[in-house]
Length: 476
Image (cartoon, rainbow, N blue to C red; front, side, top):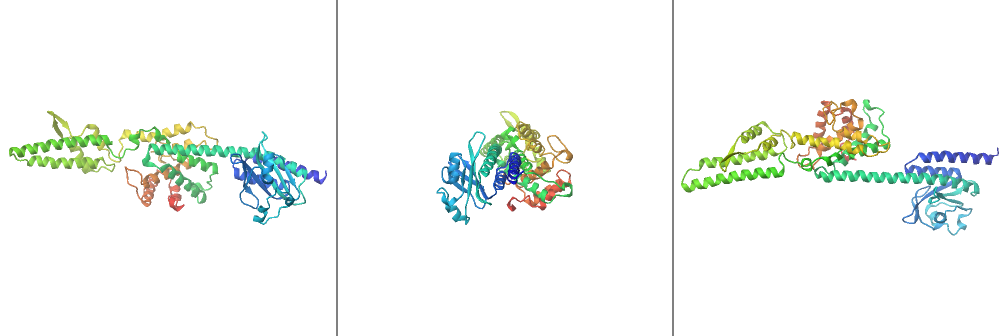
């Protein structure tokens, strides 16, 4: 077998191998770099440039090129533009003798172009996807065989580029869907605006920190780019199920709903008006009004008990006792004895901590199941199939006392454990919640440390979260 024939066979085999590699590559930037590298090798060129066709703008643009930055060429202009417009290869032995050659590029780069081989990248539909341009064959001028080989490589590259571009479009579409979903969550519950994005940022920062400095229990842990994307989507969508929770429960700031507080305040106002009328009548009749004055002062104190108990703070024993006394008091209306507080008002004001009753808390907790049900209906790609599972368990605890399933440590994925730490930290430090005050970062980390000591969150991951500074978005 002659040397030229052997080289040709080797180059054809190389194109076949490259075609396999290109078919497997879904990310556009690495794909373009691969095509450029192999194109230069196949035709033994000093440099290569790959132009993609932008049909909307009617121009070619080079996302990647040897020895220069991005170049944009109008369709039909210059050698590459002519090849794209005609879909025919161009082979030039002396670039400076061809009037289509743009000499200013050489002047700006300091490079001297001698020979050029420029071929269209044609799809299976015979549509131009882009242009491959090789410069300065290392041994003389480009040959007809070089042209044939580069056209073959360009055809394979066209299909791979179209697939990668379609993949990018799908990725952008899905990214848009995810962010629109986050927007829907925030529109439903404006008090937690930004929470989902911050949780995603904290979680991804922790994942990278675990890779860089893993604790002994997680030595060797690594996340591929698609696994980080999966974790990002799970974190962004972990609260999507809130769209299934009643809005008044979702944004409830105090123990009584605003309309309930207004009704109670009107009742106290009516009681006060009756007492003031009695006082006026007593004074007009010359009777002592001391007892009525005492009752008016007591009423003001009782209203303050209502105001204090309505706040979503911890209900201490003194206020609880005063509330029970208030619930036993009555006033007369139309000849009937009426209670100062209805049973429901007493029940809500007696909530020991926070603003939610047991039933309302169960409604809030149901958002996790709603999230799982929603995410499970999405036809995820094979690299994202665990998004529902990762998001589902973000309120589970290692000791099995979380919700909604009460699963314990071994059943909770490491990605979910990281998200749980991020979720708790942000909930503690967020300043946009009307029903609680934000705590300083140091206090939040202390609270998390107590939860880790109690076996509720992963102590090793929390250690990395603290040591790496993953908790500080401003540090990144």
